[in-house]
Amino acid sequence: MLRTMSTSYLPEAILENILSRLPPKTLIRFRCVSKTWLALIGNPDFLSKNILNHSILVPNNTAQNPNPPFLLVKAFNNQKLICNFLSYDTLDCLFHIQVQLDLPIVASCHGLVCLYDGRCQGVYLWNPTTSSSSSSSGLSRFPPHCVPPNWYVNISVGFGFDPISNDFKVVRVVERHAVFNIFEKGLSEDIFMKEIEAEVYRVGSGSWRQIDLGPVIFGFQWVSTTYTNGFPWVSTTYMNGVFFWWTKQEVGDKIIAFDFSDEIFKTTPLPEIGNADTNSSKLTVLNSFVAILVMTFDHKVNWGCYERWPHSVDIWVLLEFGVKESWNKLFTITAPSTWRRSLGFWKNGELFIENCYNQLVLYDPFTKIEKNLQLNGIEEYFGSFPNYFQVFPYTQKEDTDVNP
Image 1 (cartoon, one colour):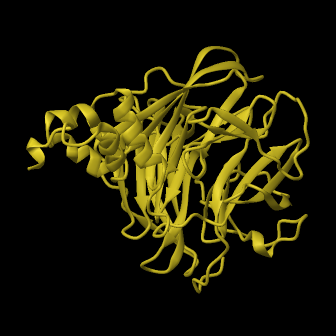
Image 2 (image 1 turned 180 degrees about the vertical axis):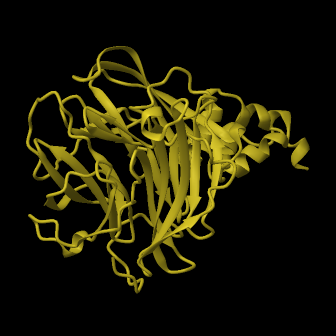
């Protein structure tokens, strides 16, 4: 019956309203119902995008997946590290903490915040509720990775919660490189060696153990954290017990996922994003979907002083992990010249943006209204270095019988 159904039986506005209430994966399957529905849902016209965008951007299951009570906004402002805690519903600042350690945040989960120091391979857990307004108390450090002599390491870190074991976990992927010189080892020529391994730390047991990387992971270039002028650009995200990295390869970028319950790595290819600037692009989450915010630029003048003008931001959503064809480009935003980096989403698809005035703004892609967010402890200044904002959902620590 559905196969013979036509829009002549229903006004187009009513059909659009009905379809907009369906989950995105269901919409994609419904493209095969008829040629009319294929044209309605599958073609990149205004009506198709409006239906699919509404079903992804506006959540219909807030009762099953309630919003977190807070947003954690971290900024490196004028040589100080400031963490603001905002109400998720209103974006009003509730309180702020000045943290002594200048470290990027890996993830926030069940009230705990994981930080990573790439300079000394230090992994930290921080409970903000046990900190005073001007200290870093509540901070605990994990045992560091031991580096053999003559070896250099590149470490990527993930953090999350395993509901099966009721435990917090940290995953660490270690790439080791070494060049043994002929004069040091009596060799006929220099030898380059590379090793890669993965370890998991269970906070409850307090120990690292090695796990299997799997054949699809070996040989990847893990560049989830790149450094520009000594500051980190992080392209990772966390969702429902799974941590995600945006990694680079010679044959194309991939997203690697690690499930903290089964401790298995999986990969998915990225869509064709063209000549985008991955340093300013962002891997994030949009209403329980993996998403990427791809920023392109008209030209680059001076990376160190950020004299570069964005052209557009492409918003892509992954409907099924592991299937390249399930990437869907929702829409493209023509970005103002003041935008520097896109940082993630708020409730209904609004974007957090860091601009060239060292401010955090909220942009609504539907109304095209931009709002400057008020943060405490952030000084207004116009230096050449940005605030390096990071934005995370935050929930106060639950009773998990696990202490960092």
